[in-house]
Length: 508
Figure 1 (cartoon, helix red, strand yellow):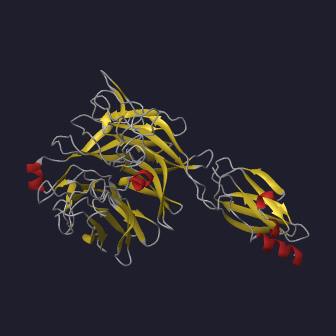
Figure 2 (tube, helix red, strand yellow):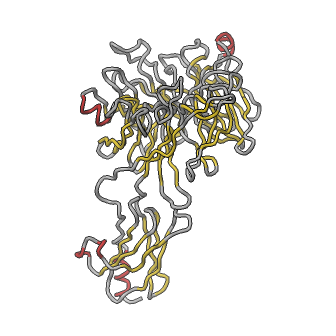
Figure 3 (tube, one colour):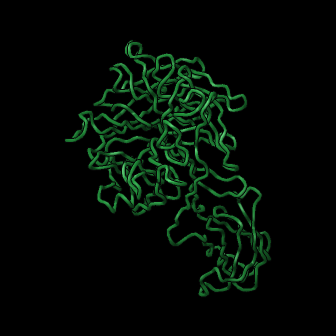
């Protein structure tokens, strides 16, 4: 290899710049479906989802708390390719009803979820459903009445998604447990024996009470949970039961669990969480809180190394802040490219909530869209107990967040005057381009990269003084992959002079 060609290779390795660097990206928000119900008999349709989507096959599955033949909820699926919604199963008082914060999860070849009421004890159920036709639904456990719950220490009214740990499905219950129906529990269901065991009864002070929308979240070898109330921090104007806690379950070498309260949540802005924690991939957990009437919520950060709790953004009640940022964030945010995407229950231009994002680098919030209730072609309204799900289009590689919104939209039949809900898509900026370079022979270089959105162009120039690079001559154009997800590569001849290369993808 000549020294000139080696110089060309080294200079090329310095010059990969993704197109989307620079100004802040404003994510397009699109309504892709309105939910609605059709009067029977038999009734059908979906209304009021209070969950996140789960990708099963090529479709996004979800539960609704209303709709279906009995009007008490459905299991349905949404096809992102066609925007069609298919009702798979419906609830009744025996199978359970009104699933809240109950996303589906896969285990033992089936999809599992909870309902918050109904069943033999009218205190909810643990349910499985087949993931292929005829989508048969089966109740694995009926959460019992108050007397049975007290006798057997069972929980009641689960508002959570099961999490598999070994051969068990673990879940939180908003009520029940040994100390009565008000505090809640953490239980496990064995997939082999079909037995449900109450592992921990929440006791208000030490372990919190009433987890609402909070499941166990695995981070490293531990599992974290939030409670909506409980703990020792109380303040004037709040209920005397505390503003919630952050807790953790760890397992010893024999697999025995230990429950630990990590911290009491701070009264005011940082109290009453109604969702899961989100791990940033390093040292921090993030979550949202509903707060109080005068201190309507926050985005909270917990440092795992130090145990410090910080409100990185608070939602205040002045007119400008309410319009620009909303208030009372509900549900679980979703992390993408160092930004947290979330919804609020209220605030915004029409006081129906907003869809927004928090930049973790500088803790700034940007509103992406206003929720509008049932006005016109509204995006939806007052999102609650939900959150987003990342989805990669298998044909194009484009990444989006899909969100079921539990109210609003254009359909508001009798009895559902707040609307049946909608499905939104939020388009994401591409992942940063990551590159490598090799030399298959003395006359060529091969550029390989991941990230970005296709089609790509490779531009080249002999000098970086001629920026912007988008004006450089093209060495290769229209580079695609059948799946749209890469990696991509191109082999180019090495010129007699040192060259710089710029890979240009699409912003959306």
